Each structure stands twice: as C-alpha cells, then as structure tokens.
Length: 115
Length: 113
Image (cartoon, rainbow over all chains, first blue to last red; front, side, top):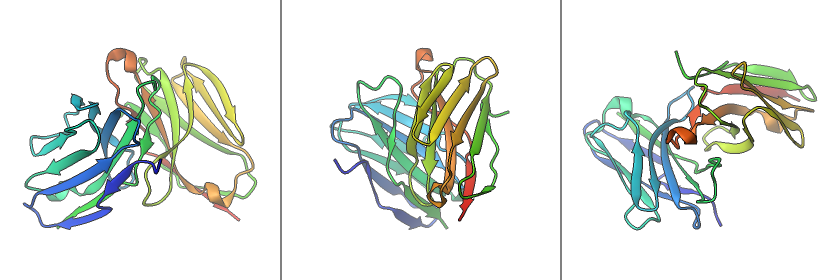
C-alpha cells in the first residue's frame, strides 16, 4: 500500500488549453474524492465517486470540468479551456466502504498553474 | 459567512508549549469532526476525528467538540518543531446525504526550537 498517488505533481499550461490529472487511490478503497485548494484556503469539495458511479458534484464543478472513474479504480479529472482562476492544487482522496466517518486519505496533489 | 471559520494565524510558539487550535461552525447538521495536518506542498494528513460532542486523546493530541456552542478544538502538548504545519479542521454531515467534508481555511503553526 503506497497511499494515494497523483500525477503529475505540477502542471503549467497556457490559458485555453486542456489539462488532465490522474489519481490512483489506495487499492481497497471504493470511494474517491476530488478537492481543490487555493493558497491560504482549505480544500473545497469538487466531486465524489463510489466505485465507478459519480454520486455527488459541487456547484464549483463547472461544465469545463469532467471527472471519470471508468473501472472503479483510478480516476481522471479534465479541465477544458483552462482559465487563470483554475490555478490551484487539485487533491484526490480515497476512503473505504466501511468508513462511515469519512477518514479520507489524501494524495500530495497536482499543482496547476495557468498562465 | 463561511460554514466553518478558522483563524488563519500564523501562530508562533516556543518548543514545549501547549498549543490550542479552534474552529467554529454554523451548520448544526455536522456530526463528524476531524483535524488534518498539512505540510507545505503536501496533501492533508488525518490527525484526529471525533463523533458528536466529547473529547478524544491520542498521544500529545486532544480533540474536543462542543456541539452546543458549535466549537471544536485541538490541543497539542509538548509541541515540537516538527509540528510546524497548517492545521485544518473539517466536518461532515453524512446523514444529510452529503459525503463531502467541509474544511476550515487552516491555521499555520510555527514551533520555534
């Protein structure tokens, strides 16, 4: 068990480009979350999967954002037509099915900079 | 007004001091309360969690929840320079159907050797 893995660690892109991030959760965890964190703020919830089903989405998740978890294992988060306001740390977290109290285990995040 | 309020600090203390970190919240539906520690350029790491009101102790860390006052605290005894990090409180209300955690903005702690 190597924990939650996120790639890439850093991404620099130009405004208007598309970017995709990947998250590999802890292997036995069936729940996967995406959060976004800006400097000086706590993480803000974006979306949540249980297995391959996307069960909850935040109003923060505009139509330029899409997340998938096709086989209930790894997940991808894509941002289309990036804007400077998308610059943030994108965090992935996972938890297990027996975890009613939401003990989330976070990855180290992908730091996105939109120029 | 944010659902969860947390003083951003920074809080600077000498090594060995007792540290008190606090959050207030407005949503009475919150049932689970957590404290995460986040080092620079890392993801948050779960330190403590409690359900409803009461105290929980784990080593040098004690978490307190007072639901009547909508106030939670984390105490760190015998603070060490390695405790220097940002501390985030987080809360959830799964009985409302929402699994998302709501985080405070974090308090930056610096423990001086």
